Every structure is written in C-alpha cells, then in structure tokens.
Image 1: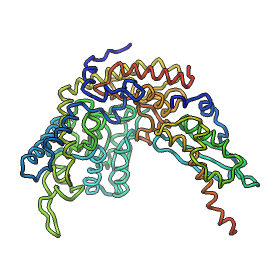
Image 2: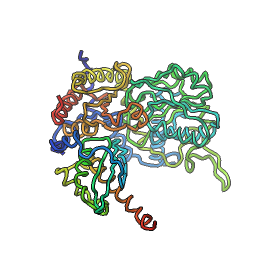
Image 3: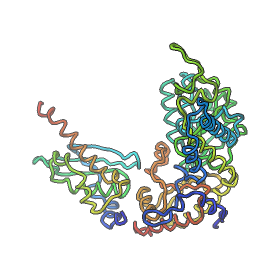
Image 4: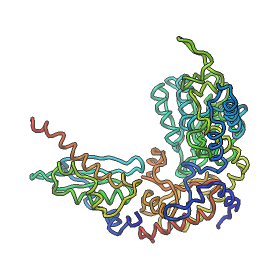
Length: 132
Length: 416
C-alpha cells in the first residue's frame, strides 16, 4: 500500500484511458460503491468478430478505482463478452502491480464488477435475439 | 494567528489507553475520527470489566444480591444520563441502542399515531441519514409531507421562510450539529417558533451532547436522541429523552418481555415509564458504563470541553489555511465558535479516500466519504470529503501530525 500511488497509477488517475462514452455501445452497466461514493459506468462495443472492439468508462472516484478501471479498459479490448464476464480479480491485481489493502479492495474492483455486469447483462439477452 | 489549546488535553489523553498504543507501522495513533466514534477512557472500560466480573445478572426480576446490585447500577446510570442533559426526571430517559434507534422509536410510536395526510414533518438539508430515512418512510406510511429547511454553502440553516414551512408541520426533526460541516443549528430560535406553530421538536444530538453543555429543559426540546459511543461510552447504548406527557401518551415501540405489567392470553398491559419502551433484556453493562462516561465527562466539565474544541478547531483551521494555495478547501462555517469540532475538506484532486489512505500510513485516522449524508453531498456537489473531528483528548500535536501527513500526501500526489 505504501507504494500504491506509483507514477503509473497517478498517470491513469489523471489521464484515464478510454474515458468517455461510445455512440452505440453493445453493452452498458453502471454501479457505485456506496461506502465512498465511487461511481463507474462501462460501455462495451462488440465487433463483427465477437470481441470487444472498443470500450469507454466514465465516473468519479478515488485514484484506486479510477486507475484500476482505466487499466482494465485496456485489458478487455479484444476479449469476447464471455471472457469479460468470467474475468477474475487477478486481472486487476496484475494491472495495478502491488498490494491493495483490504479496506480499498472494493475501490479497486469496482470497474471490474461493472465490466462483468455489462457483459453478463448482454449475454443474458442473447437467447431472445436468437429467437427473433 | 495560531491559537494555543489548553495543555490539559494531553493529560486527558493519558486516560485513554488506546491513544498510547502505536500503529502497526510504529506511528503514534493520531485519532481524528471522534465524530464517528469516540475513544473510551479507562474508567469506562473498568466499569464493563467490573460488571461482568463482579455482579453480572439480569435486572428488574432477580431477588438475589447481585441482581439487585445490577438493577441499582442500571437505574443509577439512567439518573446520571438524565442529570447530564438536565431532564426533569429519570423516567424521561429511554435506553436505546443508539441515536438511530431513538429516532426510529419516535417515528414508529409517536409518528404512526399522530400523523395523517395533510400534516408535515420538517427536517433540514444537512441531516445524517439517521434523521432522514425514518421520516421518509413515516411520510410514505402516513401520507404526511416531508419538508426541508434549506442550508447555505456553510451549512447554516436559512430561517427566512421558517414560518411558511411550519404551517401544518407536526414535527420538526433536526440535528443540533452537522456531522459533515460542524454547523450549529440555532435551536433557541427554532424551538419556540416550532412550538408557536403547534409542532414538536426532535433534536438529533449525536454530535452535540457529547461536546457541549446541553439542557433539554432550557431549550425546551420535546425529544432528544443521543448515542453513547460518541461520548466515551461503549457501542450499542444510546438514549431517547422525551417529555413525560408525550411518552405517556405514546404506544410501545418494541414489545415483549420486561415492558409489560400484566399479560393474559388475549391481552396485555404495559409497564410504566421508562420501561414501557424497553422490551427484552436491556444492554445492562453498556448502560452502566454510559453512566461512568457521564461522570467522566462531567468531571472534566462540558463547558471546558466545548471551549477546548473551539480552540482546537481554530488551531486546525489555521494549520490547514496555508494549504489553500495548493488547492485545499475547508467546508463549513469560517469561525470556530460557529461550529462543532468537525472540519471537512478536500485537497486538490486527491480523492478523500486516497487522502485517508495516505494519512493512515502516518498513523492519522480521518474519515472519508459521504458521512452518511448523501443528499447534502449531492447538494454541495462533493463526491466525497475528508473529515477530521476532535474531542476532549485532541491535542495541538494531533493537528500538527495531520498537517505533516497532508504534506506527505501532497508529495505522493505531486501537488505544489
């Protein structure tokens, strides 16, 4: 934790990657961490090959939640929605590179939770689409 | 100008064993979160140990010696709490778990019996969720309207349209001191105007009774809700003060054992005050220790504690002021005299949670987040704030440690 606020974390916090909105996202989800008020929205665009072609996130929060979400957007490009839906905490822990204290784990995992929820929500609509 | 706080606080800090224990990183514990929960003096801890090791027994029924001793200590503690807020009689003190439960008691018992469509409940824009959500639900259940006294940017209540707001209002429920901004509600103005309009007044005193002299009769409040754990007592014990005539007319809230006079298969009659509102075995040990906390605070002197917190708050505002050019913003009333010992702030683009994490590494405990006042945070457009809060054991050295830790945060976040 002492080292958490490294240069690249602060860089992602102050210059978040893939920040903003997509025009026609395939999947969208939003959630907040009521403990601290951190809020994150994720928008995924699935390309013709079935993988995430583009992604945007938006929201407000601490450096840990925002930097983790920013780094996550880079990780999920090129993955299928099934892969996104089944991502584990490890992807976030590997991205941030160092230990996060238990009290801040929810901040770090908020972006992941929202991305997975967006992917799962979209997957849940598929049988209906197949029927039409 | 830097104020000088009374050196007595350092001697008082020695009564609190936790303050002598270093953090896991070997730092001195600098506890600046007393608005969330206060630390406990040795005398209160000893009272708990003494009860459990010498006279642990259920109250109000046992005929044996230790049961009688427990009952006496439990009721003596009620008398101490009554004297602490100058209630006319001990029977006007109802033990609850905390402020929240005390407010819920009034909402369920008095509220459901007395409110109807067309009535209004008047609260304020600065409330803690504990003094807001119960009224939202009560309004939904009874058809009463929930209204708000507006607050300005410093959290001071705007009373210009109070008389209009009071029209049709049956209950005014407001906090005395804001847990976010420290702003103090002018009860001496609001209570008489509420009474003149035919409304009762409930005061959420979670942030005031622990910190300043409070006299329920002088202020003529109808209900008062307080938590013990914010005033040197254990967690899990608080109280509701209510004027006797009001409590007498109210139906029980929780029901069951200990709150009855007689029970038959098809009916029951209820115990007299205060036990009518205390169903089931009470939190005996913590109530007795609450009495010890009142003794402890009274011995220090509530007027001294208030004065000390003004000095410490002024010192804190003075120590934080030099950070302003680097983007530190303090919220709440500008003058220490106008606020409780609570200072909320944000520092440049450092989120309050990151600030709290960095300060924690330095042994400095502050609160970060929405402080259970989400509507106020939305109104002020703050996603979160950091909050340092003070008490009788807070010293200038604690504030100096806060300032040093803020320098560290500026360094980590490359501010300046």
